[in-house]
View 1: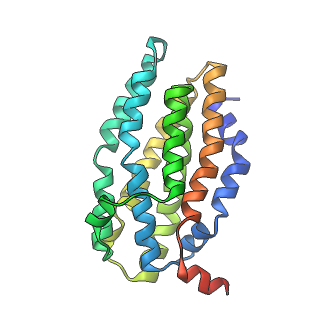
View 2: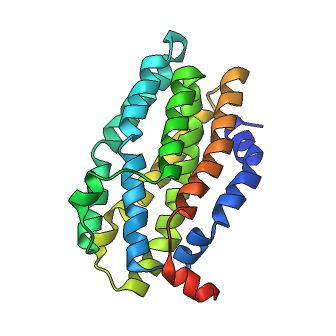
Length: 223
């Protein structure tokens, strides 16, 4: 079995738990308030703003034996630079205060997710970072494909409020094909274990980020 398939199989239960998070289920069905959408974007800003720094940290920690993966990170860095600004633009288009978000602090769950990623890269195996890539890109594809239109329709917001979700979703479909090929080149058992471990933990931590967002529309529906 190729490693990408092993990664998907090994994290299947964790992925299903993330997908069952009430806030994600509500979003996919358009049961979300405008404030909850803005709050989601705020947390996305706080973790996406660390994407490039995490990639640079990972690249700096990889040795010469992983030079191919350093090159791949250069491509990721080029693609991901500036995406946090897309999110701030979306917040403004949705009627939120983008500058307030820029200077705000993340929710505890978001802060812990980002901190765990840095810890694994800098204290553990830097190849583990690719486990985070697997979780975040796969989830953004799901939200972009199934959630953006539902949320836009239910809230009546302009397309300009969904640049991050729609554009990032399209990019991540391309990225996931690239990622699958890249992961199939991971031959070290130690690296494979580290990537799977990160992905398992990241599914749970990312579920916590969504769970930290209050969605009045979802609560009303549930009642």
